Length: 479
Image (cartoon, rainbow, N blue to C red; front, side):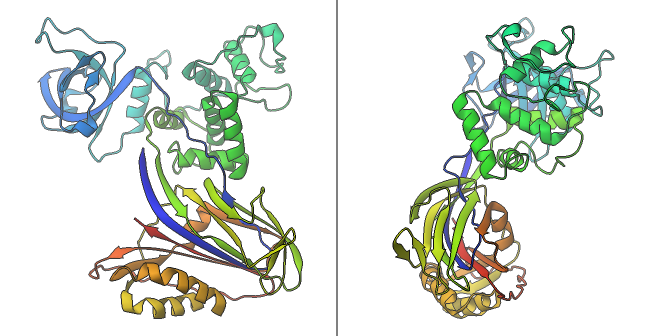
């Protein structure tokens, strides 16, 4: 797992009510599916037709234990691939079967041993869907049809995908069939997948099209496949509750589940409403078996929320994102319920506060500096004064922003600064009730520069403040 830490400071000023998104206290981490295979990266040396030698090139990309033995190389059986696919000196990431070792010791040295190559990926190249499917076929997950073909273009049915999930996760139920209130009248006792559908239902993996219909022969969307996959991955009641709570925090069904899947590297740009083909399923399952989730954390060190209603108003504030609170003040109890005054004072209980405070960690946010500004130390204050005014911050908000961030920025001779509000808003949503007439969000990211960088100048749009206005500001240092 790769971790990238970003120091994140966030201040939110609201000229009336809004709902804010906050870090969930827990997040759901998908555990990749385990199987009888291994993954190693090494250099290719052709031996004979149908076999290659894969040699260790780096400790970081190799394991000392292969199967039950130690070695700096392995022999791979490549009979399911074209010999022309491999050349001496190629660097590949090889996926190979380890629960069965093929015996070629009559042909090679006694210390050599051979494993079946399931799939491979060349350095810096994406693996194809066909290769993903070959990998799944090799470990016994995906089966071909009577003609021997996988037919990745065909759609997968609700019965097929349910049976597949039960097979992958070795799902079972200790109850007899007559002990389970099985509601689906369209799954007769002689249906080929009845036993596995019963197991999936008993373990909370699936639900029907309605209370008594499963529709086993209907196709399934990518959206619903993802939901079932995530439910299947929750191995106990604690994990199931965490999955449900995280999905609710991120938008419920189906958005919350899709966000979890994207955050864990199971899907990328697939359209959730698309009918899932066997190729789509192969890609998702391949990721489920092999993904290493790249998780980035933003450390929220000083988020502050100001509320400015036009008249004294009761306001509910919530913050939603994938991550964790580390501190809130006043205490955050499934949101803040406060009374806000036009001067920005907020009242919680009997205590007055100048603002609402929270800090925490936001997951899966990594800014891209494809545009922005190269700013020197001496230009920092004037730069912020100019840009923050354009972005709609008033004098007090600009002063608060500048007095906090300038001491951080001038530690460096140069910084590349970007106002990354759109991307940030996709990671941390803002909800305040009642709804403000205008919402201004300003989120600055920056990184240390040497002064010689060339960067596309970011175009900023002026924002007007009308009626009840919500103003949010914050920032992050990429480290």
